[in-house]
Image (cartoon, rainbow, N blue to C red; front, side, top):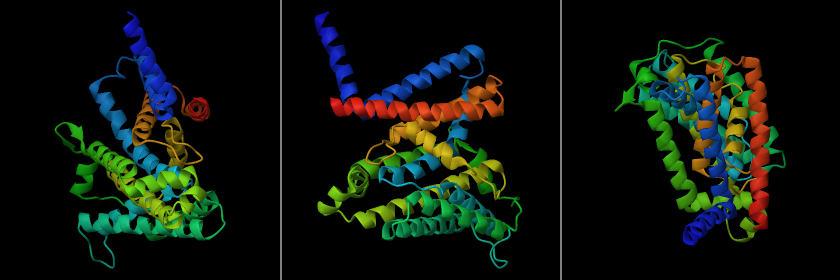
Length: 333
């Protein structure tokens, strides 16, 4: 009996001493508690069909959250992710339907060019943030507005429909019963998990966010790392925009509008430090799942859309507070 108690105490102490583990433990508890409450209210919630529906909703949320997380971990904000997503989806849709100068392009080439354009947006963000004293929040907010204008210009204020079969497959197809978009989401998360935790570039991102000055004096090229973090953010935003366009069946100039707030909420719930230097891909994925469950669950419980905004706002505040408490406890330990 004593050995069992000691084992449990050791596990608990290990969780408490590690802020990442404590954060993951907390959000898992939140997911389980919320699932039980909604299931008791509506038995459809935990059905296989509804679970896949939630995962499809999570795709755009999750990708934009990881796009937001990379600059956040690096100690910066990127408010232009939603505009980059809209730009990417619009460019890919136009190139594969109407074409450029009357010349249509294949889907793969259109996607490649879309990602490159959004990487360029990220590069511009990174250069301005790194080589000026303008706040990253203001810089990327300005970029967001400018990119939105570009989206409206290239689509002439109209949605672009008539997308090809490949878009349809991305939005509604499945492999072995799993939606293609969900598989792409998981692939991106696995890749980013490896990049952030197992590569020199990833460790530099954490070092930059943890202590920019110390990272500089330790020999890290802090400016290059900061710029590249924004480039990666732009590329992931592009993928999110293309998948959102595929699921919508058309490219909308208003696509992903306001999603940056949702992305920040997911990062906060997933344990990403708002001041930089901390956060995990697993936590972000769990945060995205939690956000998808909240949206879906509130709809099943017939909670009005206005009240849903209230609930999301409260959850954001609670998540950030919870993250701060965990960080303080870990620091004391």
